Image (cartoon, rainbow, N blue to C red):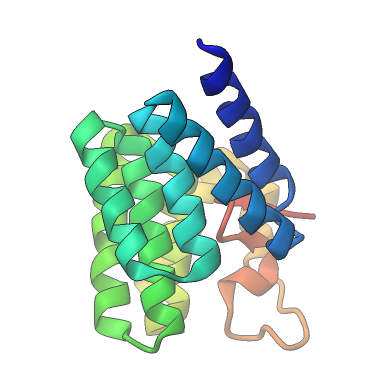
Length: 178
């Protein structure tokens, strides 16, 4: 790996580590994007562009990142980018586009075998649509992977009575949080 690509990878990792500080994470994502571009590392550029799109809520950047992931065959990040696009659509109030992108993400997560990605996406669909079947699918996957986490789906937390994510599933990281 070239020095420039290594620097870009470091900036990309910094973006993940700064997720709780959105302005800093956004800056790190933009730095990673510039560094990956300078290094000519298309897959890294696409990953960084996904992060830039996420933090700026820029659907056009997200769509460009998705096309790049497909171009280089990065199916795992294709699924992640689809999930990010779905949530951006959801935040804009476009439930139909959000549902479509979540369903596309589900298909790719299943293809690449990312069961946590599938569970997270089913949980997002459950929240978006009030879909009991999607919630049950998320629970079933989590019972396979992490039974205590699946039980947390049943815990209702104040202010999150109808949300799967109130129970501890982090939609951005596709992981469970304490």
